Length: 129
Length: 316
Image (cartoon, rainbow over all chains, first blue to last red; front, side, top):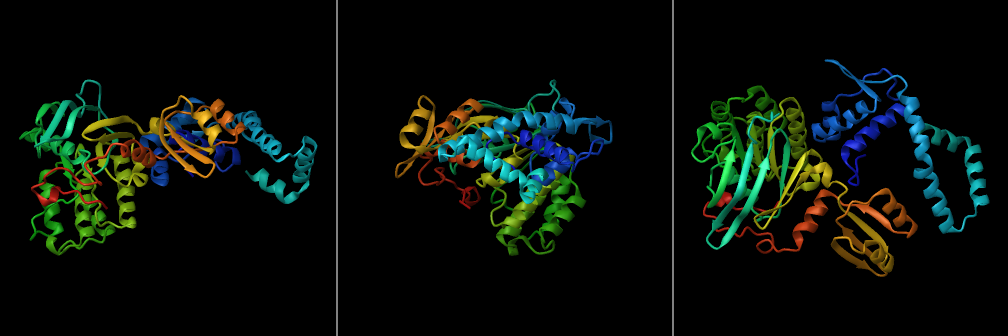
C-alpha cells in the first residue's frame, strides 16, 4: 500500500497506472473519483487530486466535465512502453547487483532466467503482475 | 478555498505568550492560508494548546500581532462565530444531555448539520438522552468530535479530541473527517500525538517545539525529506558525510543513521553498491527525532501552571 518514502500523490498515480497496465481499468473506463480515492486510502483529498491531475497532465486520464475521469485510449500502450524503459533500472540492475554479491556468474544467472521462463507457474505469476 | 483577495485565515506576527517565567509561545510568525487540513504537532507543553487558545481568544497573547479572518479575535463575535474549538477535555454543562449540547451548538454554528450530527451519534453509539456527567470519557470525546464535525465551521480546531476513544471510534472520526471535508472544504487544524494515524490526512504540517514553529511545510514535501541508512559502520559514515544527521544508533558492527536529506536515484544506487539499506522515515519518526534533542519542560509534562484542570494535558 502507501509507504513513507515518496510523496503520496506519486503513489496514487502509480496505483492507477498499475490498474491500467494490468487491465483492471480498461481504456475509456471511468476512474474512481478524487473523493473515492481519499476515502479508500484515507488520505487528504487534495493529495488524491494531485495524483489524478498528474495523470491528466500526462494524457493518461482525461476529464469529462461534470462526469469524472476516464482512461485515455492508448494509455495502456504508453504506460507499457514507459514501464519497459524503467525495467532495466528497476529490476535488472538490482538483480545483477545481488547476483554479483552472491557470486552468481552471468551464465548461471542466464540459466536461472531461462529456467524461470520455462516454469509455467512462475511465468503465469509474473505475467499477471 | 481562498481567493487571493481574501486575507489568510490566520496571520501571526511575532506572537508571544508568557506565563510567569516561561514563554509558552515564543515569537511565532505564521501564515495559514486556509482551505486545508493542517496538523499542529509537538510534544506536551510545546505550545500547541496555548497557540490554539490565542487564536480562539480564550487566552490572549502577551505581545505580537494576531489576526484571524483579518481581524483580532479577542471579544470579536464576527470572528468567533466562524470558528469552532474542540479541546481535549471539553467542558459541557453537567446536567445537559448530548442532545441538548447539540441543540446549543445548532444555535451558535450557522452551518450546523443536524442530520450529520444524528448519523455520527448513531455511529459512535452515543446515548443522546443520558446526562453529560454520566457519560464515559470516550462518549464525552464523541460529543466533542460530533460538534466539531457537524458545526462545519470555517475554521475548526481539534485539540487531541479523542481521549478515551478506542481505535475503531478514532477510525470513524478520521473517515468522516475526510469524507465531510471532501464535500465541504474548510480549514481544519488538528493537533494530535497519534501522528502515524493522522499523517496521511494532513495536507500541511506545523511542528511546534519550545514555543517556536520549527517546521512549516506541506506534508508531501516532508515525505522523503529524511531517511535512515543502515549498514557497515565505516560505509555508513562515508555515505552520510556532510549530511545533516538527526540520529545515530549502533548495533554490533551495524550503524544506523537518520539523515535529513532527500536522496536521489544516484544516491540510492550508490547506497545499494555499498550494500547499505535505506529506509523511509515516517512523519512520526521525524517529529520524534526533531523534538527529542531539546527537553520540552521535563518528561512530557506541561510546564504551565494551569489553574483550570481542563487545561492540563494528559498523555494518551
